[in-house]
Amino acid sequence: MEFIEYKPAKLTQLVLSIYERKVTFPMRVQFLPDNTVTLIFNIGKKIQGIKGENVDSKVFNPTEKFCFLSGLHTKPIYFDMEGLHVVGLIMAPVAAKAFFKLPTEEVKDVAVEWAFTKEMDYIEEHIRTLSSFPERARWLEDYFFQKLNQVEDLHLAMKLSQVVKLMKRDVLQGKRPDVNDYSGYSKMHTNRMFKDWFGLPPGKLLRYQQFNHAIQLIHQSNLSLTQVGLESGFYDQAHFIRVFEEFARMTPGHYKNNKTGLPGILPW
Image (cartoon, rainbow, N blue to C red; front, side, top):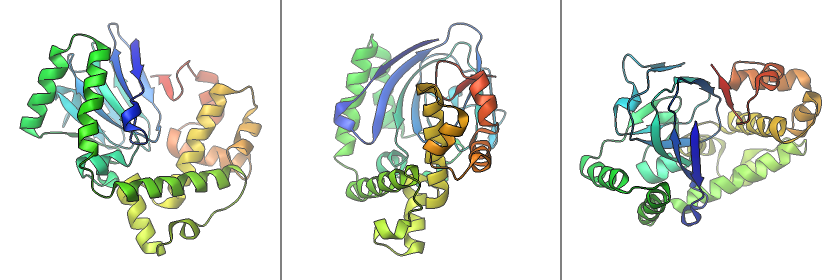
């Protein structure tokens, strides 16, 4: 699998990276939830198989379309990737609402076609015409930077993102934060905003953050799983296993024994 990545400095906090991925041989993989949404431009052929909860490739194989938004995944998703050739934007969950006016909760665990015809024709022409990844990446960065200037409530997205960072910091330190202490809004309004911008209510979002933190520690350290659980803010090993299984549908031990060089990506 060929994978090239570019970090778009102009789109800090909304777009984490722009990438190009090409698979020229049979490859079946599963992707674990990674707290992102991804806008994908398919410049190859459609992939042969997709499997996952709330995913039915007989109804909609998103790679049949030139462009689709892969929403926030809270469950594993499986791909038969032979022939895949895509360019994509890996984005923070708030980008779904910021760029596409879609509440992130509405695109949770699903893929949806981005079908603004005139705009899509314009994007497709440039992506297919530009011959190298650096050219495509810089063009996409400039294009979405222009869209960024049109985003409503960007200040709210950034404020809520900061709230999540503070809450995650406290959880990793073994504290139990109350979101209302940080947001300044009522509990009901805070829950609604979190679902709109992050796709999840505050409590589940924090568990999701802990799960993703544990994935990174498993790859980036020599810590035991007991230590990984403690460093990720879990009460005990049982709590760690329960939350890990909630998102990965496997235990931390199974993941560690089968991990690849790419965090969150396993053979299927």
